[in-house]
Image (cartoon, rainbow, N blue to C red; front, side):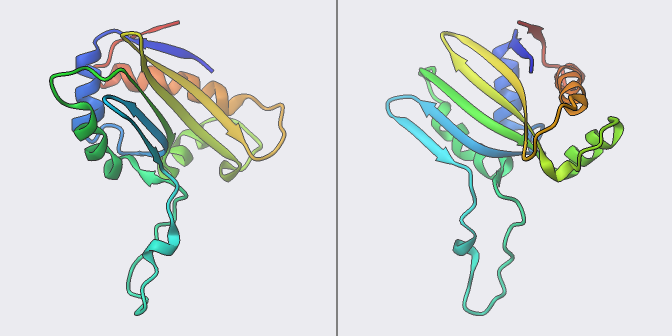
Length: 165
């Protein structure tokens, strides 16, 4: 696990909220504090998609994609007042996760791992914290190492400046 402080917040927020840069992520939770606290549980209610004629496609993922939550987050954050704070818990989407994990030398199945980031704005700072959760017990830390190396390079390659905390 590493923590990164975003140096140019306006640039980062524009990329997070108005571009497709983070669209490979799914949303576990989003909390935005403005004039009220808005909380979004990103878990998909699959029963919502069930129709009587069976024509609707039910999403495979447990969580909503960032691309579907992003416009909602933007509408809550934009305006003349800076939010009091926010927190987004995002997980890397399956395709990108498989690509990243196949490069690391590990003995764990990718479906037993979740690669996540917490993006938190508080006291005037944006901090991204990486995290890995496992559905099994393991001493193998190769997935964590790969994830902790990937996020800083992902940010840098997309013009987002960050310092390791």
